[in-house]
Image 1: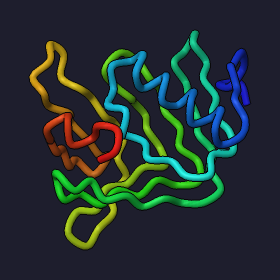
Image 2 (image 1 turned 180 degrees about the vertical axis):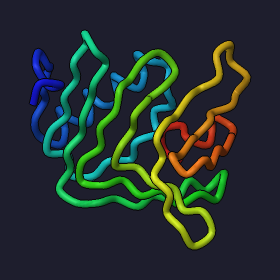
Image 3 (image 1 turned 45 degrees about the vertical axis):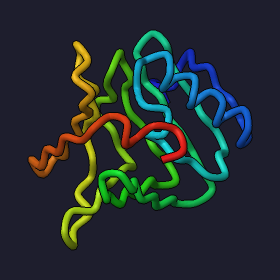
Image 4 (image 1 turned 120 degrees about the vertical axis):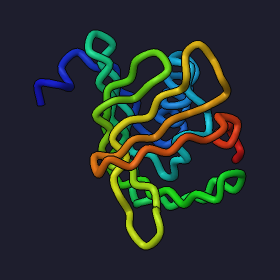
Length: 136
């Protein structure tokens, strides 16, 4: 795939998780934003910001501070830049009985302590950024 050309790739759970966490940290995103399990591979193309994460199975996680159920597919892709992930695929947040895909995540800059999630369905939700800290 052309978008993966020139990527740094880490394979295996420990190395992949380490890389995913360091990317979140480097780009000013909350470290608990991607609660991953059984990571197969993580890749990142610095020139374009394209990243992907492959994991063995889909993960559902409940962010308790905001009472939000989020689903992470076996493959997550997106374009990472400072304080945001755009064109995100593989992440869905439960709204009532529906699971609209999350298309974009942005941390307010300058910092207001807020993180904004947008879906292709036009749903926009804002939460306190600390709700997505590591361990949440």
